Structure formats: structure tokens, C-alpha cells
Amino acid sequence: MKRIIIPTIALYIILLLGCVSCGFAPGSYPYAERYEICCSESVLIDAVEKFKRDNPEYVVPLQAQLKDGRSNENDHWCHVYFYYKKDNEIVYAWIRKSDDRTTILAFVSINNGLTLGNWKDINHGYSNEENTLQKEKFERLILSEIKKQIH
Image 1 (cartoon, helix red, strand yellow):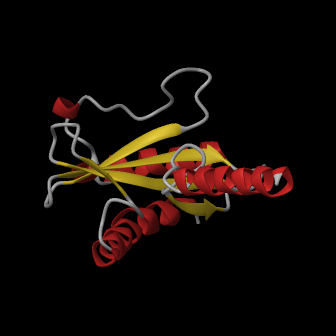
Image 2 (image 1 turned 180 degrees about the horizontal axis):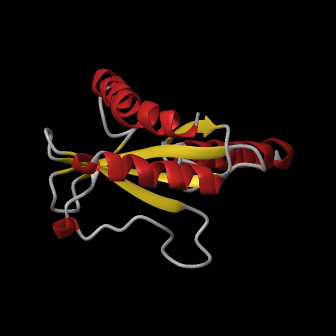
């Protein structure tokens, strides 16, 4: 009888843990859309800064109190923010070195309006159709222009 009960209990525990863990995504920024760029991290950061100098309409208004950069010296990510003035949306992205030749630019989320707290994660907070539209908009308006600064 013990031979059946112990494996059955173990199986139920494993299944329960498996079901519970389905609600948790691994790592920081698990839903971010990642773009691998063939350049160093410093070159990509410079390209973002130049893009914003050349296109000030994409700079987040000061009232939002969001600053680009690392939050402290131990931060792995260089946080960057863009603004879609027409849609009154703030775009959050980060930059992180992948290896000596590539860097990741990740599109993380969008805040509706200049009052913070209305964030929706890309690849998680939108319907499939809206998510696709948001990624296409980011790629067209921001990513492609930043890449032009590099190549």
C-alpha cells in the first residue's frame, strides 16, 4: 500500500508545483522584446543619445521625472525612455551588453500618459493584434532610426 501512496502523493505535489509555477515568468523583464544589435554597449547608448538629440519629440517631458541611464553602479541595465507625443505614451526600454560584439536593446513596456503607473508590458499586456502593432511602431519609429546612427 505504501508503494502506491508515496509515489501518488509525490506525483500530486509535482503537478501542483508545475501548475502554480506556470503563472511565473523567469528572470527580470521576461516579456521584453529583445533586439540584438551588432555593436558595443557604449556605441548603442551613444546612438540612442544622438537619436534623441536629433529627434527631440521622442524625449520624455520633464514632468514624468524619468532619466535615462543606470539606477546605480551595480545596475546591469541602462534604462532608456522614449515618448510618443501623438499617442501620449512613454516607451521603456533597456540596453545591456550581450558579449564583446553585440548588445541587446529590449523593448519592455508602454505607459499610457505622463502620469506613471499605467504601464503595460509588451508581449504580455496587450492583445496579440495590439502587441504586434506596438512592436511594429517601435521598430519603425525608434529602432530603425537608432540602427541608422550605428551603420
